Image (cartoon, rainbow over all chains, first blue to last red; front, side, top):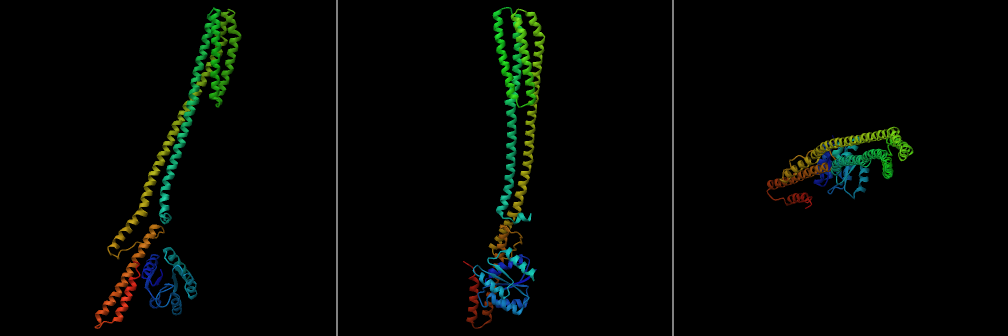
Length: 122
Length: 308
């Protein structure tokens, strides 16, 4: 069971993802809507994984947040979520240090598989 | 049976009805095979064995008639009567010939029949040769006593032998009739057994399938319906059960869980903002327009996430 922080501009997306992630047997320790608040949560809660929206609406986007988090805490794994049309940003996120990717709309099976895959690699 | 739970509802229903359709196909094939088998037996019985038995009886009658005509010829003195009876004898010969040909036609496929029919034909030739070479010429020559000797001697032996052969043919035919009737009875019993077995399997499979489909489809839907009703009345504390299945029911439960969690989160965030707003309003003597405006914007942003 991994401890997870979710960062997404949409409350609905955070809620949906929280249910899926918990359904897959993980614990969601925190969730927020901006990159900056996400970094604060990660610093305080020290989760295993941060799942972050690739194009956050306010402040830093997902890629910059990942870069910043890598600088602060290398141990936390990053997974980006992306909407259709944002596939080109995924490679940039990976270059910034993202370990996995989850496409929207979320499918429980895909989320569980992706989390399982990156946790196995750790 | 986890694989069955995970396949789509359409596939589950196809599988369930498929089992039933398969059983119906097996029953139909069994019924067709049994009826076709019975038809074959009846055809053999009514087109071969029964006509053969009748022809045997008729041939025995004709042979008896032949003996009677010959006996009358021996006892008659009048030439005109002799000619008349001799014509009758020839007519009767033809009739017996037709019967023997009919035996061959009906029983030609059976080796045992053919053996007896060949014996009968051979004996019949001997009988006719003896009659036409000795008995009839002696009668015409007025030597009735000598003719009578042939009639009760050699010819009688031939006649007895022919009757024996036809009696054996008759026995064979009766045995064949019995076998055919027994076979039909056996086939009916077998078909009945298959129908009973498949019927029981069908009933059991039907009950199991319906119960199982109810358990894995109808029951979870009823459960979700109950949860939806609670949500409709504003109760977001309901718990959506965890279902590790990938079919439509699993997808529905998952969507419900996601929806409920989102609603809870959204309600909590709106409540938090309203609380902060209320706190600010209560603690400040003067209205901090900037702060209130920022909170109102945040509230608006949250509510705008709904697509109405």
